[in-house]
Amino acid sequence: MKKRKSVALLFNPKKMLLSEESSFPTREAYKSLRTNVMFTLPGSDSKCIGVVSANRGEGKSTIAINLAISFAQANKKVIVVDCDMRLPTIGAKIGINSKPGLSNYLAGNEDVRGQLIQHVDEYSIDVLASGDIPPDPTKLLGSEQMHSLIALLKEYYDYVILDFPPVTVVTDAVILSSVVDGYLVVVRHGLSEFQKLKETFRQMEFSDAKILGVVYNGKGHRSRYGKYYRKNKNNYYYNYEYYQKK
Ligand SMILES: Nc1ncnc2c1ncn2[C@@H]1O[C@H](COP(=O)(O)OP(=O)(O)OP(=O)(O)O)[C@@H](O)[C@H]1O
Ligand SMILES: [Mg+2]
Image: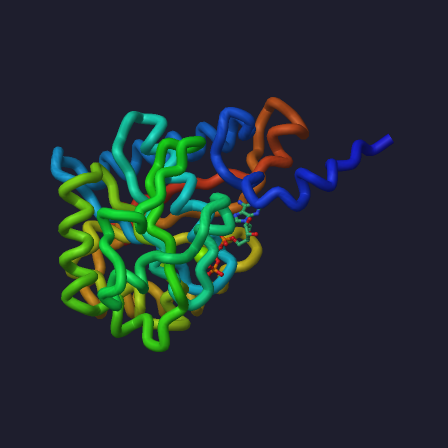
């Protein structure tokens, strides 16, 4: 008889987060993503990485958190900043409060070094949640304070990972292209559309955004180890420049 998943697991928001309980291919896929990002962004200075995609629901926030966890597992100091101030999900996914957060800091309400940055013991990462939903997130993200905040965070962390809203919906992600060292573009198996992806690359190139690579999310793993591994969803990383040159 087919085994049913427990209800608790189905509704557990942390079930997609990287941990010792994650399947072997999932852990390997994130290790490989981490290594590829490290090689694509060499040098000892801190890095700011943006995670984007064309549309909603393609896995940006999940990948932003899991990449951060993967860096933490490699003893790197890392912070995830929820820059999706329209439909924030980082707080809920990781089980922390979404307020106060980035919007409050940018609006000048709170001190970022005080209560805004939340440490998540379970994953050894820091998180700056989205904060209260502001009337004009694009303006806040494009502000001088946001640029200074990223510079400030880079003094403390090895990796600053920014989770953005979709590129074809709002310009929030590319507005920071001058301070983001590289963007990862997430493509979701069975969901992403070619034309939207093309439009995403066009917009990013127009804004001089440095694209590190494409993360292909959600493709079942083909493996000689059998059905168990095939059922698990993994990420594959493709170097953007390499594929452009081909
Ligand atoms: N590889 C995967 N396999 C199965 N489910 C996944 C996978 N990646 C993401 N999901 C699920 O898909 C949903 C959307 O993922 P996520 O919130 O990370 O996407 P997003 O791109 O950040 O969306 P949004 O643009 O709305 O913020 C979530 O429920 C997440 O758990
Ligand atoms: Mg998201």
